[in-house]
Structures are given as C-alpha cells and as structure tokens.
Length: 154
Image 1: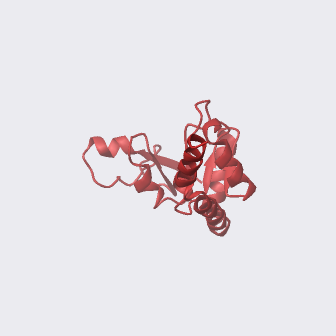
Image 2 (image 1 turned 120 degrees about the horizontal axis):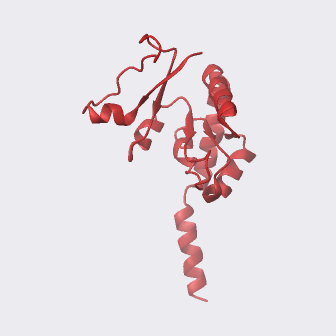
C-alpha cells in the first residue's frame, strides 16, 4: 500500500478551507492511502472526529507524549510510541482495555497503521474500547477538586 500525505500547514498557508487531495510524490497520481499530517496548533479536535486512526505524535521521542484520550473520545483507534510519561495512568488504563497500541519504532508504526486501516472491524472495536476508557475518566476535575478541598479542610 502506498503512503502519501498532506501537511496541514501546506493548505493553511494557501488559505484553503479544506486540504487538497494528497498526491503521490512519485507520479502525481492519487494515493491509495491518504494521511493528514497535523503540523499546526489548534487543529487536533477538528480532525480527530473524522479520522480513521490517530497516531499521537510526540511519543516516539522523549518529550512526555500527548493525551491519547483526545482521539479516544471520538472512538478513533489510537497508536502512540513509548514516550508517554505525562500520561502513564491513562495509557495504562487504555492498555488494560486493549484500547491503544504502543509501538517501538517506525516499522511498528507502519505495521500498526496498515493493520488498523485494513481491518476496519478490529479498528472499530479498539476505538470503542478506547472511548470507554475516556468515558470512565469523565468527571476527573470534580474528583480532583473534591480531594483538594478535603485536604485543605483537615
């Protein structure tokens, strides 16, 4: 399967509302698999809702990762690398429910993406398991505030 992509900044720079159809770098023909690479700020929420699979960036390098619950709330299957130090608890919960795939490197990332994009039923099931973890986390702010108030009142 041929991978090709379009960067969000490329269509934003041209003031286009919708991304252009990605073209093959080799011959300009349409690709069989289109990837939108978000290299911009503030676009994730809009794109996660229409994604087939989400690779949560910043997780293949040691930067602490990003929140996998953001795509999980839409029932999107989530793939991320091993750097998720800032989200250990949530990733652990998602792993326990088989609602996330952790990859070690570029080769595993490619394999995971191809599997999830070609086995739509497995991807849908994984996405739903991730969504359940998201739903279980709702109300965390209220619980944290209650715990803090309880500590202050002691």
